Image (cartoon, rainbow, N blue to C red):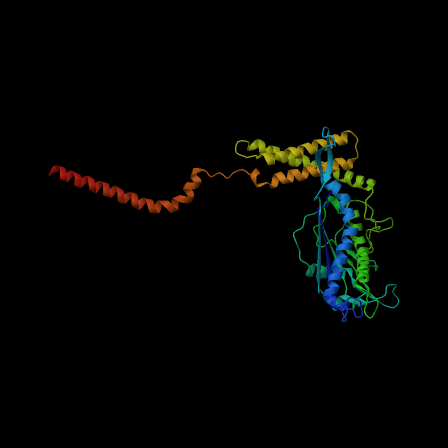
Amino acid sequence: GHRLESISIKLIDENPASHVTEGVNDGDDDGITAKVHFDIIGKALSSSVQAKIGPLLEELSFIYGGKIEAYSDASGMTERSAVKTENAMSLAVHLSAYLPLPEDFVELGKDDETTSGKYVSSKGLANWIHAHSHQPTKNTGDVEWILFVPSQDNAPLTVRNESNGGNGKSIILSSPQPAGGKMKNVYPNGMSIVDIPNFTGKVDLDLGQILSSYTVDISHSLVYLIGYIRAMHGLPPSTSADLSSLKYHGDGRENLSFWELESIARKLYSSSLETALFETDALMALLHQHAGTLALPTEVAHELNNATHLLRQSISLIEKDFPVIYATSLLHGSLQHLESVKNDHRFFELPYFAPDHYLAVFSPLVLPLLLPMIVGLVREVKRFRELQNKVDRC
């Protein structure tokens, strides 16, 4: 199995100036400028991500970030333990503008086609994204998604799949269910088109109405990302979704049921347990091999002790027939402690240089200076002794 480590969402507004409106009640007779529109769509993006993606990550955080923390009850006598989750996954949101689609990429739908407006081929859109997007170094658990807002000249815009002729609002660039349990390192993983309404020429509108409308449109586009994350964990994106279809999307639910979380936990438990045991064995072997020279500070020792404690607790929960979700959560907590130990600079062995290494480095520098001084000193000593002998004879 594979784990979700981070989600990055980037919205690209093709041309904010094309959405400039007049007659909107914003306190300015000139209407909404490109800057004001860009600020509104940024607020709508933040609100949509918080409302749609936030609850999903909170549910998954229990699986990916379990740590046992001890606490006392109200009397202060009985000590209990609870599973805490924090910083299990990262969520980043970015906003950019003025990245126009090439004119030869956009085509006008024919009259006999069911989809009206303009469309772009899925292959052309994928190549355009890869050519104009920054290619960061990604881990296999990083999911990156692009929301593209077309200008009013290209709206409404759809994506056409050349293989089956289907039309949709999303394109998947990497499979959410990779073969062999390993995700393909692709940037981005997918892209959705956000067709925002045109308010040009309309009156009696205010910024709140426009913000609400943009939030709804972006939220609908984020459903595709939710479906991708669900499929990544082996869950159906919806009851009728076809994974090979361009119209691949989720069922609109942000929350995961207990049994869905249990299914994810069962899928991840075996691989997580194998990884935790391997990392623990590797650290113990390192400690045994370098016991005489490797420093182990108290803080690092506590991290390692917590890792093994969570590992034992996880196995114990499985033996007691508790739900696997709790055991998997503790396993990922153990892996976090092990990763902290591995990355701690105080855990590394101090560098050691043998004497012959020092001679090999410093001899070419020191000997050319010392040899003439030694030879001159020997000559001066001999000359002093000869003069001393002559004085004694006299």
